[in-house]
Amino acid sequence: MMATGFRYLPGAASLRLDQVRCNGCRMCTEVCPHGVFEIEHQKAVIVDLDACMECGACANNCDSGAITVDSGVGCATAIIYGALTGTEPTCGSTDSGSTCCG
Image (cartoon, rainbow, N blue to C red):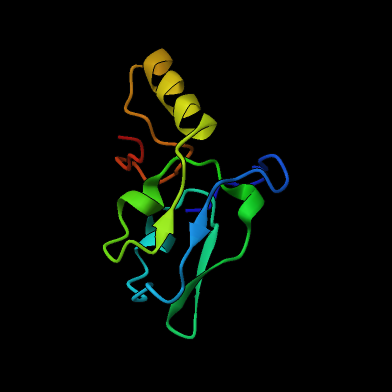
């Protein structure tokens, strides 16, 4: 599901992961449109913080509450793009029907 070439402002993303709370469900790796997460030793890890567009998909789908992020510019961009194209916000995901903002 990773979009190619996307970069955010270096070190600016508000994304935080509490590995102690992570239950290893893999949902963050499924919903993140930019491949920010991977699973290592049955826990999520942030592998590319600067690719995070702060859409909030990971936090919205994290049942254990291990992920926090202040939805920001990425989500706004997705909403605007959706409005301009007459589609639902997708935050750049190639997974058809996948929405992340809400």
